[in-house]
Length: 526
Image 1 (cartoon, one colour):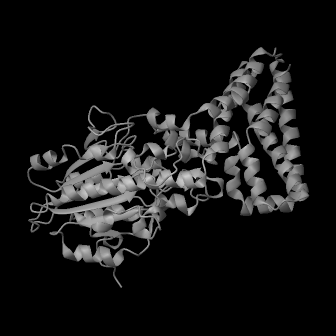
Image 2: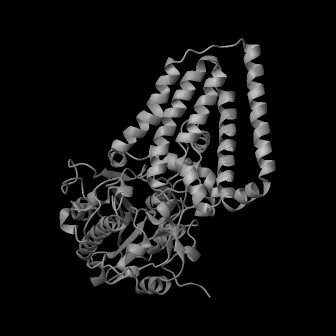
Image 3: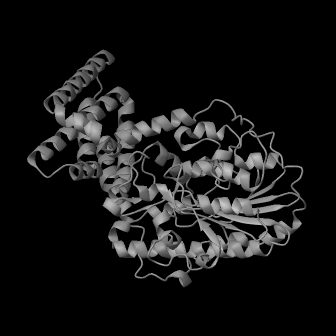
């Protein structure tokens, strides 16, 4: 068999058997009719032609087999996640995957993935290995490739002409659907990620806020604990009006909830560095953020003692230049059962505070929080209040009620954890101006419209992945002017863009990189 014919067979197989999510989302976006069916078939032909052009350009002689095998295996895994959770594998998702540790990734794997891998990956790969290939002389091979590309291009043009109005509507009104094309989107996104993150030499980090200082007349020490939440959407906090009582302990405290807080991204890999970056969501990019110092560096320049404690995958590079402690194992975390709990990050924290002589203290506690899809693992048994609970990572196998119950129980545990943080701060009210700021990194889809988890591109992500919970608490001695301002500003639309400047404001840091207009703890100017 000639390599061109094998490539054509592989391309047809990929379009027909690894694009269930693409065709499902296309048909769901159009009315049920014969026209929709015909147009969907046209989209399949267009996708096959585009993929054939890509494969034809890349597959040369002995590269053909490994290229096709790698594409089939990759597409089988991608198809599993897209079919199961309705996610897409774009650049942001690739970044998230690469920065997620193996322990968290295991929650996403089960028997169905093995079936996809065997039937859509290994089985066709075995066929490609076994089939004998004939290679033409280079000149003949080049001519054959040009002919294939020309035919594919003609078919594409013919489809665009015949279904011109339908394609005009598709690209204008349903542009996000292209993210579901497998493996075209994955291949494009992987290439884009490599281009953006490949550098020839060591990373040079640009200094930021070197002028940062505490006012000379500030005689009060601040102790601020910043709790970095995980996957907690705003509408699941009873403090924000949710019908279920998911914040019974926080409701007893004098907390202020920011009712309209929007995330910088829909994944941890984007939102966490963005939260601590001076960059706004509108101009954020990973390369610039990693090459510039962040909020923690600015605080350090001002003499603030900074500590990052992590019960999640990592700080995503944010804490590379400050004290960092990993609480993901029982070696450091004393509160571990099925997994290590967020509460364990409080162990020994009072001792750290007591031993820190002079200067303000800023502590980040990075939660495991509501990290999905195994929400039932995110809380101890004592918090199994809402039942029945989904006890599998295959969310599509659970009822909506079971998924919501498991997710809400995890929110209930976060409520408990935050109450413990407040209790710790109260113990230090006589020595510090104390405050807690809790903000989640992103939200979560829980099956609405067939979408699960998070990480969809911003342009197509639902509000459930963008709107996050945010809560502040202040001790008795904290600046009353700032507390009052936060109370008055609590219903204003805020975003992760405001965190950088609000933290600087709470700690009363003077620096040119501080923007008063973005500080939630300052009165809004008329």
